Amino acid sequence: MRIFYAVGEAPSAGLLGSQIWRSNLYDSLVDLGHEVVEFDFDLEGCYAHADPASAGNREYMDRVRPELEGALLQQVRAAHVEKPVDVLFCYFYNSFCAPETIREISSWGIATFNWYCNGSYQFHLVEEIAPAFDWSLVPERYRLDDYRRVGARPLYCQEAANPTVYHSVEVPRDVDVAFVGAAYGDRPSYVRALADADLPVRAYGLGWERLAAPLSVGARVRRGLGQVRRRIEGRPLHPPRLPGSVVASPLTDSEMVTMFSRAKIVLGFSVVGQPGPRDPIIRQVRLRDFEAPMSGAFYMLEYVDEIEDFFVPDKEIVCFASPEELVDKAHFYLSHPEEREAIRAAGYERALRDHTWQKRLSDAFTTSGVDRGTQ
Image (cartoon, rainbow, N blue to C red):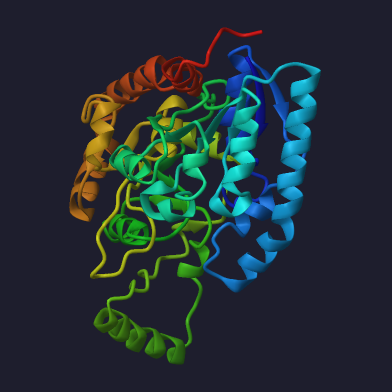
């Protein structure tokens, strides 16, 4: 098929230099044999300002949105005139364009798809634009009815990994326990539990190094009083402090893939957002849950029930539900390399067989009825 592709390089402006969507989505579409035409527009600023909750974001998108809409219509029309376009494939928020813009493209006989993976806690940011697309690709199973409720047509499409990018690397396994990702939610508490148990753990990503920065006496007092106020008000608590030996700066995409081979245990966490003591806990299956096993990692994941649709716990990955369980299982698998290797190998085989982006996207196009074969 001929696909017009309107997706940025990465979902977050904080991931400097990351190309995770290009690596996973764009490259996989090309691997499937589709002819992919890219939207010539800098979407990164739009992702950074997508949430209209702040006045600054609203002002930015009010300024950029007409330009984005005009460029999208002009470029899709030009590509369609040159050679018929079968699919418009986007990662768009409400703030990117009016629903009428997408519907106009649909009226040209082009099937429109929107991929979005933050619906677990930010569904409101797409609930206006989603009904304009012919299909919404949704990785959160429990959100499907919410899409239907607003008039959208959801297609369950779980996240995955591109095996041409995520693969094992021949390096020594010189890191015992590693986590790659930002410091938020319950992640620092889990990492602190490992450090307190004298398990060698390293956390790479945004926000970790500030948890080890020295605090003055006054800052420590203010922090303690702030914790009391936050607990009373039901706001998210300050994360625990961490030893400097545990924290590290973010990795590049390629360094992350290499880390999956360097680490004996790679950690994953399922809680999203920054819930307060009184807030409901939201969990979801993550991109990392497929990238790590696809890269040949032994993967230990904070349990979320949906993961059992994709991996067999204790045979293809290992799950934990509390800091104590994580510590116990980390001790066990670090001291039992044969058991660890068997699970690691089984997880890799399952990921490669069932959880590639090539398979996910091919299945989505087939289910939707738009795939008429590559051109």
